[in-house]
Amino acid sequence: MQIHYLLTVTSNVSTDDGLTSRPDQIPLQSPPLTIDDGHPPEMITDQLIRNQVGYGEPSEGNPLLELYKLMGDDGQLNTSHSTYSVSLTPQTMRNLSDLCAMIPSQAVTRELIDIYFSEANWYFALLEKHYFEKLYRSWYALNDHSRENGHSEGLSTDLLYFPALVFQVLAVALQFAPLNIPCLQALGIDDFIRRDCLSSDFSNRGMEIVRIVGAHAPSIVAVQNDIMRALWLKNSSRGREAWHVLGGAIRMAQDLGLHRQAKVIQNAQSPLEETLDLLWYDEYKRRLWVKLYSWDSHMAFNLGRPRAINSSDCTIFPPLDRDIPDNPATTIPTAVFPHEPPSSFTPHLFQYAVCEQMHEAMSLGIHQNHLEDYSLVKTMHDRILSLTNKLPPVHRLANPDMSWDSTHTHIPKQRQQIATAAHSFLLALHRPHSKSHTASRDAAIQSALSVLDAQERLFDLMGTQYSNIYALSVYTVDASTFLSVTILQYPPSDIALSYRINTAIEKARRRLELTKERVSMANSALQILKLCDLKRQSSPQLQFPTPGFSVSQPSQILGTTTSGEMGFSYPSDPAQTTPVQINVAGGISNFEPGQIDSAVMFDDFILSDFDIDSWVQQMGPMTGLDWN
Image 1 (tube, rainbow, N blue to C red):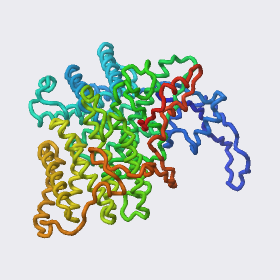
Image 2: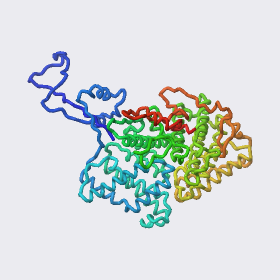
Image 3: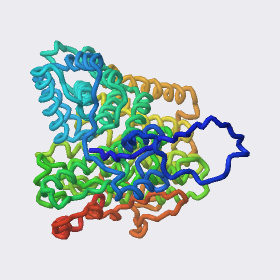
């Protein structure tokens, strides 16, 4: 829902009395306070003038904000609360209808949507089922209305872009769909090549809808369409294109203000159910922003792309660590209680917390060579360990509570997802310093091995059906390539370590071999590993262990002790787990474990006749990221 401010605008006019004066003959005087040209003032929305000038949302330093303050109470500035709608030209509507007619039957569409939410969304968390289904029902109801009446009224921007999102969901679902399901038989698909071709067609049709409709006011669904397209591109080994599409999604989300914490206001006349709906919808928007932020951070810190997001611009509170309910209007937003099923959003909150550290590391220059203060690397290392220590028992990496594993089958996979996120950060953190600091070289090797271990477990849990998931290849490629190059540059003198590295690389090679037919990135990675093998074979001095370096045991790396089956290193000194606050010019966000209390989401919740204390008491000490 957007708020449109109405501004009264007067036109500047001048009278011509037939006389011409030179500039130096014009007497200096104050301009008239008002000019009346005999026409009523033109009413425009603030959205129009902001689009024309390029202003963002009203904020400090924006002259429109001061104008709102001055005019807000005198009747000249009115507000109207409405959903932005778009009226399309007849030709555009026909083109849109032609593309929508290419969406498969409801039975096929329904089956593929269910596949996406059951098989893919647990890993990506780009959509929320409740809100998607709500739009899905509205969109089909609108189609029925259009068929009965022969036309359609102005469309909300969410409904306008929804067919594009449907195509993207179908495209991604096909990347996970087995060949023996009814919907593929109905579509005449009997092999993976045809399945992937249809997936590509669906994704392209979604983008064609966006193209013919044009860029109107931004909407949540338009953002989701873009990030789902980016996901499809990633899974198709088109990472550079995905980065470009992701940038567009981020800019649109920023235009919507998703990076800034909204105020949820309960009017005296509003029922509690309406307020609860608004609170959960705010939660929904924050989750979408968290995923955009995490993707942008990963592509910057791990893959070397420029950031599109500045953390100092972001004011949102972290989302709650609980699933969005089927009926938000009857559910109070609280943290998960001990007797309740675990949250499926925990891995994504963990990734968000890690990505906050990525942003801070980049702002401090920790990701660059020849760092002046190397202790900052250790500080970042310890912060990640602190985050893993605070995971809920169900999702922790060492000695997890597995009592829910049989009923929530994605939890074992999510543990490996978390392990991959943590260790890949540590690998990227230490890699720039691995040549100049032995401690970082040791830590990077251990992290790369742990990444490959987690990827092996995740691959075994998911099977080849999911082999084209971008994350099942990119982390394997990154870690195995690093190890292959490192042992060429610094041949290990420890035979046991050399064997462990070679074994991990061979397992990675096996996974890539299984997926190379459908994942072009896997085939490219195999060629790189083959080049490394040829280099080793052509260098006699690399055939036997030679003096170079010897990786310390995990207990010696950065003053840590080994703990847990995931190969994670935990500080031996409890004091080392305390995050160090680093003050840097530019307002870097310090997003520390235990810092955010989930009750803070209600700080700007303005109530009339409502007892906020009862809510906070029910929430207890649980926080958005402090899972203790």
